[in-house]
Amino acid sequence: MDARNRSAVTFTDLQGRGVIVTGAGQPAGIGVAICRAFAEEGCNIFFTINSAYDSRYHVGDSPEAFAEHFAKQLRDLSVKAGYIDIDLSHKNAFQGLLDKAWYFLDSADVLINNAAFSAPDGFQYLTTDLLDAHYYVNVRTVIMLSIGFARRFTKSDGGRIINLTSGQDLGPMPGELSYAMSKGAIAAFTRSFAAEVGRKGITVNAVDPGPTDTGWMSSGIKQRLAERNALGRVGKPTNAAQTVVFLSSRAADGITGQVIHSRGIEIPNS
Image (cartoon, rainbow, N blue to C red; front, side, top):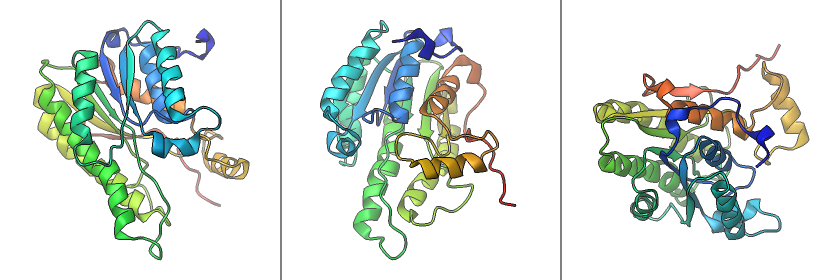
């Protein structure tokens, strides 16, 4: 990997730690950027893909071929890297993921709940099936993975759980009722769960990176979002990854139960 693409900030305390990252099957996605950022810090990585869901983001290589190649790229940074192709909407998928991750990593220190299901709805199109599809991945799996991780974590401190959210507590998301509901629930869960597991040496936070260019933005959308942002640009996957790595380091020992809105400030319409 080109050294020019590596983060200028390093956290030496992360070296050798085991990190689980869900939802790293999209080449330009936040999950991939998070895995790469942790590997650059010397962390061992176990990530998930969902080939059936991720296939829409691939041109050329299949999700499985991408995952194999990406795991090799991470191993080239002198860390362990493995993955599992898993549908996290299945009721007990979280258990299988934790079993395999713990075996591969020989325990884990950090859990990044990045995987998400998203489909447009709005009140005229929302169905119970669509609502359930969002709930299973974005709420139930996140909660059960977090609980399973906390139950298995036996070190005195240094445990980290970080959930990716999308700023649902900042304003409405018309046309995405199911997604807004599910991600908003995770912000509430983050605060309450942090209070429960703090004495186990685990911090729990959520990161809202704001609109992030993972390949879904047209040039028009990107321009409009950039014009409304005080920074004059949209977010990049590496921005989210750097925030997540910071929250996983010793530098963030005193931060828990927070939703970090690392999205830049929006300029009101004049």
